[in-house]
Length: 133
Image (cartoon, rainbow, N blue to C red):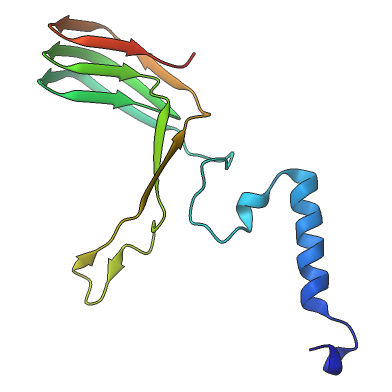
């Protein structure tokens, strides 16, 4: 490209982008990943219900989740503010071939977001763990 333009614009653009990313902490916007653990714009999910009945279940609430409702648990494990989070590295590219095949590549890391729970918990023979703030 240099021989046509006299300047290697690809390198200039990459260096400019890198400089702005360092200045504004925005590497996640141009790292060619669908999602990343450290991107600051994770959407907060709001989940509302009257009563969630758990029987011999493992229920976990993690990063960027606001949960409103009551939980009735029997022989179950409840974690609010789970430190583990998961992303699908193929998000948006999961459907393959003729549209009926599905692929996932899951990665796990530690949460840097907050969890909010509003409600009550009734637990019998169950464990409750509170993780983040």
